[in-house]
Image (cartoon, rainbow, N blue to C red; front, top):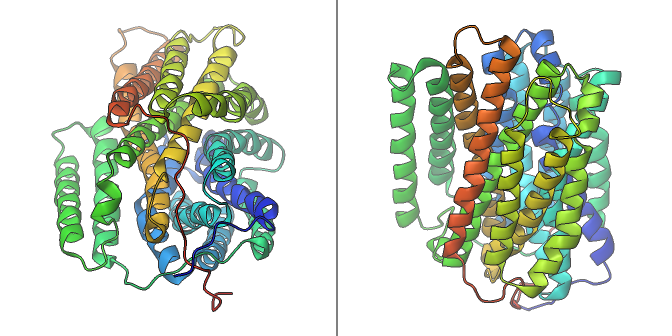
Length: 481
């Protein structure tokens, strides 16, 4: 294996393409959020099932990310990036043409499959393109910022499209954007490849196991923990996830090699990313319902109301996060980010049906965006710190898996908490107050996830951290086109 230290002549265009790919994948996790009420009415989807339009994407995305990262390692990262973009475009077309909720949710699952191929390939290609050190850290900072900013861009764009062109354009808009990214992949280095096999049993058990877990949690909120179907899916989830662990121990080419998780630092970063994702997606869900159901904002106004969040993410990921990363450990940076995000959730708990947006809604979003912006950059850098070249796809997939699965499970848990809080309001409570009580309970639950993430940082070292150590990579395979 011949080593190389990056491709500076391609670095600028490559970073633009890689960042755009990540932005598109993350954006689609939330772009439907603002349009959910309109989608539900148009396709006759019950309100209790609406969260599956969000969860289906996050679940497929997160459940298949490890397999997606492995395919990039084996078959070429640029090639898999292109294949994933094609799958994503096809799914977006199907979703835009959907005539019922089942087809739309199935299309969202297929979008998640495409995203699971694209995201780890993009992050691995970033490591292939930039030499270890300050250059790669800056590039990883941009990539990490897309993880937080993409979610907010999805909300802004989703509101505008729903208002002026109809909700179907939430799906159709992905096609021209993906085509531009696809064209730009010519500027991206092919990346490294290795020999080996794909752990299909591992991919199947972890994906179906996580899907069963999310469904069980979601159903428990409306049918109770004693419901037979809830218990059956929960038991299936436990059995399959145990099977996944056993398969990984005996597989010749495990989807998740033991050496990737044996690093305590990486394990801690991914735990924090999981908890961060668990709070973030649910927060957007509750805020959108509050603004459209309680405040009666139009989709466009709802999207614009998320601007403070976008500004906060920009400040946190572009200014505060990198400055902290240069001065202290990743552990401390993550703890600071999560503390700020948790404080924002406490601020959101002050929302009432007649609350002035300037006093709570907008400033709390700004604060939350800053906290998550700081967190995403630090977690992205920490997640691929010191990883061996042959494992960069898996490590990249693991970072994204943690965020997406955290989002899917967190939304299911907090949506159930919100429903319970609403139904347990005192008799005679006006409907707007009862609903708002549920939404704020859910956001306090998101704050609890962020506080738990601070506890998760104890796994991380106190030594300096934001700097990645130099590693060598294999020469790009010339047979890949």
